[in-house]
Each structure stands twice: as structure tokens, then as C-alpha cells.
Image (tube, rainbow, N blue to C red; front, side, top):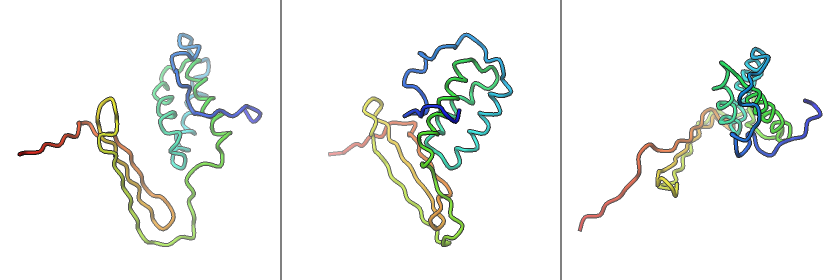
Length: 142
């Protein structure tokens, strides 16, 4: 795939429109090997985590459509090879943490989203983003 055209997104907007959902992929071992390599890459490329997780859920019986999605992730990586988290050997040992919240930010469910990241020097060592399972409400008593 060294000569493939890059893609702007790791997965198509309409996953049900990808052809080949009813046909099993002929080389499931190759599919699993490639998907496993992409799982390892998510350590420094959190932008592909959802797409890789979605594809890896199909490892037991991959279809031609699943393999097309796997190839699309690779095409996305080709166009965004400069993206990612850098890990530097020469950095300080100060621990920094940042967090942010979007209270009731989802217009449909009114659920909140929060995120955090932790740095050791200039290297990011952990991050998380989560939509809260319950709706935030405030009440005022008169």
C-alpha cells in the first residue's frame, strides 16, 4: 500500500455503505496480524483508537468490508504520518496534570464530557476522555 491515496478520516461516515458485509475475508490470520499492529500504534496515535477498536471487534470472523475499513485506516495513516505523540528521552521529571470538562455539552443527551492528561516532563504518559453516564442537573431552592 505504499502507493495508495491518503484518506482524510480513519473510517467512512456511513459504515453500513461499505460493500462486502456478507462475504468473509479469505485470510483472517493476515487480518488479525495487521489489526494487532495497528493496536500497538494507538499508543502514540490516539486519533485512530476508535477506528482500530471498531475493526478489532471483528477479528473472530472478519468480512471483506472489515478488511476495507482496515485498509482505510492505513490510508489515513499515510496522509497523517506527521501526527502523533512524541516521546523524548531528554526531558525533565516534573509531573503535570491538566483536565477540562464540557458540562451538559451534548445537545441531544445533555451529558457532560470530561478529559484529562498527565505529562512527565514534556512526555504525555496518560490521557482519558469520557462522556458521563448520567445527566447533570442543577437545582435552585428558593
